[in-house]
Image (cartoon, rainbow, N blue to C red; front, top):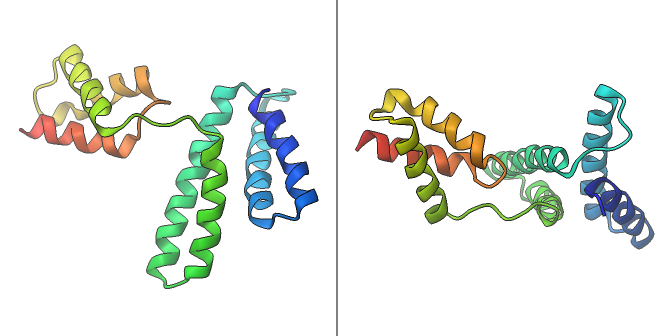
Length: 149
Protein backbone atom coordinates (compact mmCIF):
# COMPACT_ATOMS: atom_id res chain seq x y z
CA UNK A 1 0.00 0.00 0.00
CA UNK A 2 1.43 3.43 -0.90
CA UNK A 3 2.46 5.59 2.05
CA UNK A 4 -0.21 8.22 1.30
CA UNK A 5 -3.00 5.67 1.52
CA UNK A 6 -1.48 4.00 4.59
CA UNK A 7 -1.29 7.33 6.44
CA UNK A 8 -4.93 8.09 5.56
CA UNK A 9 -6.09 4.68 6.76
CA UNK A 10 -4.14 4.92 9.99
CA UNK A 11 -5.47 8.43 10.54
CA UNK A 12 -9.02 7.07 10.49
CA UNK A 13 -8.04 4.35 12.95
CA UNK A 14 -6.42 6.91 15.27
CA UNK A 15 -9.61 9.01 15.18
CA UNK A 16 -11.71 6.01 16.17
CA UNK A 17 -9.25 5.10 18.94
CA UNK A 18 -9.09 8.76 20.10
CA UNK A 19 -5.28 8.59 20.08
CA UNK A 20 -4.47 12.32 20.05
CA UNK A 21 -0.68 12.16 19.63
CA UNK A 22 -0.83 9.61 16.84
CA UNK A 23 -3.64 11.50 15.13
CA UNK A 24 -1.72 14.76 15.36
CA UNK A 25 1.38 13.23 13.76
CA UNK A 26 -0.63 11.53 11.02
CA UNK A 27 -2.50 14.77 10.27
CA UNK A 28 0.75 16.70 9.91
CA UNK A 29 2.05 14.02 7.54
CA UNK A 30 -1.16 14.06 5.50
CA UNK A 31 -1.09 17.86 5.35
CA UNK A 32 2.48 17.78 4.02
CA UNK A 33 1.41 15.22 1.40
CA UNK A 34 -1.63 17.25 0.33
CA UNK A 35 0.40 20.45 0.06
CA UNK A 36 2.91 18.67 -2.16
CA UNK A 37 0.11 17.25 -4.34
CA UNK A 38 -1.40 20.72 -4.76
CA UNK A 39 1.87 22.06 -6.16
CA UNK A 40 1.47 20.14 -9.42
CA UNK A 41 -2.14 18.98 -9.21
CA UNK A 42 -1.28 15.31 -8.87
CA UNK A 43 -3.62 12.73 -7.36
CA UNK A 44 -0.95 10.85 -5.42
CA UNK A 45 2.72 10.90 -4.47
CA UNK A 46 5.46 8.35 -4.90
CA UNK A 47 6.81 6.73 -1.75
CA UNK A 48 10.19 8.44 -2.35
CA UNK A 49 8.58 11.89 -2.28
CA UNK A 50 6.62 10.93 0.84
CA UNK A 51 9.81 9.77 2.55
CA UNK A 52 11.49 13.09 1.76
CA UNK A 53 8.56 15.00 3.24
CA UNK A 54 8.57 12.79 6.33
CA UNK A 55 12.32 13.34 6.79
CA UNK A 56 11.58 17.07 6.92
CA UNK A 57 8.87 16.48 9.51
CA UNK A 58 11.25 14.25 11.47
CA UNK A 59 13.90 16.98 11.46
CA UNK A 60 11.35 19.59 12.57
CA UNK A 61 10.26 17.39 15.48
CA UNK A 62 13.86 16.82 16.59
CA UNK A 63 14.58 20.56 16.50
CA UNK A 64 11.38 21.26 18.44
CA UNK A 65 12.27 18.68 21.06
CA UNK A 66 15.69 20.31 21.56
CA UNK A 67 14.15 23.78 21.80
CA UNK A 68 11.46 22.68 24.26
CA UNK A 69 13.97 20.85 26.45
CA UNK A 70 16.27 23.89 26.52
CA UNK A 71 13.27 26.05 27.43
CA UNK A 72 12.29 23.61 30.20
CA UNK A 73 8.97 22.82 28.49
CA UNK A 74 9.11 19.08 29.04
CA UNK A 75 5.40 18.43 28.43
CA UNK A 76 5.69 19.92 24.94
CA UNK A 77 8.92 18.01 24.30
CA UNK A 78 7.14 14.76 25.24
CA UNK A 79 4.30 15.53 22.84
CA UNK A 80 6.76 16.21 20.01
CA UNK A 81 8.63 13.01 20.86
CA UNK A 82 5.40 10.99 20.65
CA UNK A 83 4.75 12.44 17.19
CA UNK A 84 8.35 11.76 16.17
CA UNK A 85 7.92 8.07 17.02
CA UNK A 86 4.86 7.87 14.75
CA UNK A 87 6.67 9.58 11.86
CA UNK A 88 9.69 7.31 12.23
CA UNK A 89 7.49 4.21 11.94
CA UNK A 90 6.90 5.10 8.27
CA UNK A 91 10.56 5.79 7.46
CA UNK A 92 13.19 3.26 6.46
CA UNK A 93 16.11 2.88 8.85
CA UNK A 94 19.13 5.05 8.06
CA UNK A 95 22.60 3.60 7.72
CA UNK A 96 24.70 3.40 10.86
CA UNK A 97 27.93 5.35 11.32
CA UNK A 98 30.16 2.50 10.08
CA UNK A 99 28.22 2.14 6.82
CA UNK A 100 28.12 5.93 6.38
CA UNK A 101 31.90 6.08 6.89
CA UNK A 102 32.37 3.46 4.14
CA UNK A 103 30.22 5.46 1.73
CA UNK A 104 32.06 8.70 2.63
CA UNK A 105 35.41 7.04 1.94
CA UNK A 106 34.09 5.84 -1.44
CA UNK A 107 32.83 9.36 -2.25
CA UNK A 108 36.19 10.88 -1.33
CA UNK A 109 37.98 8.36 -3.54
CA UNK A 110 35.63 8.89 -6.48
CA UNK A 111 35.84 12.70 -6.32
CA UNK A 112 39.56 12.80 -5.61
CA UNK A 113 39.00 15.28 -2.78
CA UNK A 114 42.07 16.00 -0.70
CA UNK A 115 41.18 18.89 1.58
CA UNK A 116 38.41 20.56 3.55
CA UNK A 117 37.76 22.99 0.69
CA UNK A 118 36.39 20.10 -1.36
CA UNK A 119 33.83 19.06 1.22
CA UNK A 120 30.94 20.25 -0.95
CA UNK A 121 32.07 18.07 -3.83
CA UNK A 122 32.19 15.01 -1.55
CA UNK A 123 28.82 15.74 0.06
CA UNK A 124 27.26 16.26 -3.37
CA UNK A 125 28.53 12.91 -4.63
CA UNK A 126 27.46 11.20 -1.40
CA UNK A 127 23.96 12.64 -1.42
CA UNK A 128 23.52 11.87 -5.10
CA UNK A 129 23.98 8.16 -4.46
CA UNK A 130 22.77 7.68 -0.85
CA UNK A 131 20.44 10.60 -0.01
CA UNK A 132 17.59 8.50 1.40
CA UNK A 133 19.92 6.14 3.23
CA UNK A 134 22.12 8.38 5.39
CA UNK A 135 21.85 11.00 8.09
CA UNK A 136 23.34 14.17 6.62
CA UNK A 137 24.73 15.41 9.94
CA UNK A 138 26.63 12.18 10.57
CA UNK A 139 27.92 12.18 7.00
CA UNK A 140 29.03 15.80 7.26
CA UNK A 141 30.98 15.21 10.47
CA UNK A 142 32.70 12.16 8.96
CA UNK A 143 33.60 14.09 5.79
CA UNK A 144 35.05 16.92 7.89
CA UNK A 145 37.03 14.44 9.98
CA UNK A 146 38.47 12.58 6.99
CA UNK A 147 39.27 15.64 4.90
CA UNK A 148 40.94 17.54 7.73
CA UNK A 149 43.18 14.59 8.66
